[in-house]
Length: 112
Length: 111
Image (cartoon, rainbow over all chains, first blue to last red; front, top):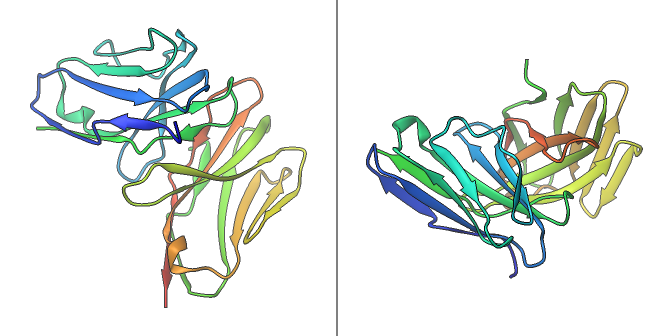
């Protein structure tokens, strides 16, 4: 595709619900990254994949957060039992093998 | 303290030059980036520089790197209203594939 796409662009959910955020990387990019960005802050790393293998998940804040990329292309970030503090912009980026990253538009998550 | 620091705001007049500054702490930083974030859009990669370079120019953009002082700057010549955005500085080392971002500098361009 022309760029990284993410869906939904906006998600409003109630506390305690599970949410799944999707990322579709640039075609051919083998590395995929997830970030979380709070208001007034830069993106903070969550996790990344090379192909379908999760290489580093050290940035996931707790075990309610998980990510997968089963076929080495589209990735899903899942947040279980959402809490208000999970409200943020979630950004996905992709790159050629561990090179310069190109970001998608992000998913704005609001937990009520 | 933060690994990457930027001033939060910069206001310039249309047609003037803008200079956005960034300092970082990791002396082993290998790649340094400038990203632009417009409302409702993703982070757009503007330019990057390798640590073995002092300067990089790309049309209206000039990046200067002072490794000794761990200081990176982005100069935008002939700033236009369309340049109004948040600019993020980021650095990463060769051994890590994950860049560390600053908090971003909001550039406001007024007539």
